[in-house]
Image 1: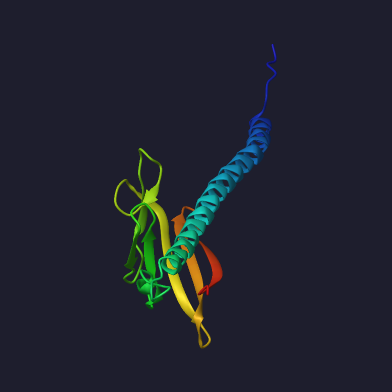
Image 2: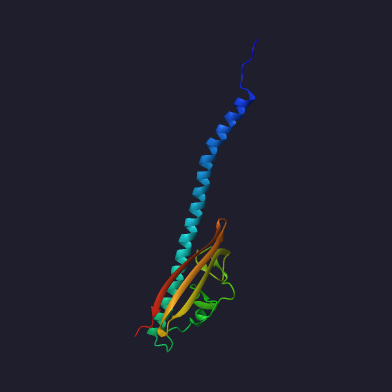
Length: 165
């Protein structure tokens, strides 16, 4: 009686084809997960930058409406070489040292701040720069940076603000 079956070579070829058939979808799934993580972090970074910009604009408007002598009162820390970090939840502005601290996320409210909650991967820096010799104009730069498994990323939002008369 002669037994018929697969030879070792046929078995290796079959396993190789099966492996190649599985690697394509796995690579596609890994790419999709990477893209989803990157997209989520980019949206968060954009919103954090927008929040920082709105804080500065609101502070400028509040100073002008209150008749403050200095339209940038409370934002002088942001004009330093290292910039500043703003905590919207408690209306504070502090100078950054070499690096601004990591934002925290309050687990109960979901708000980003510098006081309560675990550290996140995000850092936000606000900088005010003079525009030529015009004392009534400043360039506001809000930069959000973060590190993830796929490398370091950053997002910068720029806007010029003026002293309203």
